[in-house]
Length: 90
Image (tube, rainbow, N blue to C red; front, side, top):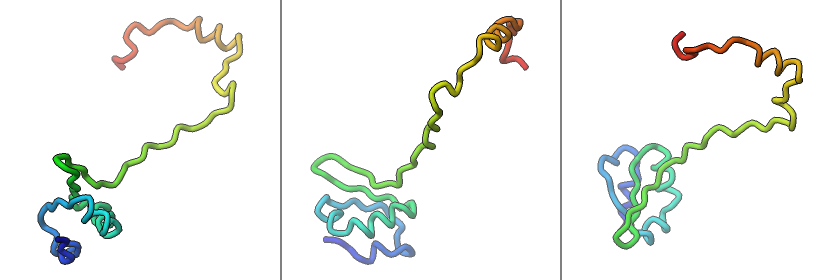
């Protein structure tokens, strides 16, 4: 069954798998261990799940409509600039 001593930070040295039933009963402590980078694996039949902390991407900033708009004069100026034949070799 579920070994409560395995949940202490100082004694956790090996990977252990839990059934869904075991993990469900102790989800809070298992989540705490996963947040501390301990490997947590959950069996569901023949398949395995891993409980890990998610890394969320930075949010995409919202700009108002027209934020990147360029006036016709500015566009003409930018288009009149010479083309750099090797822009990545600087």
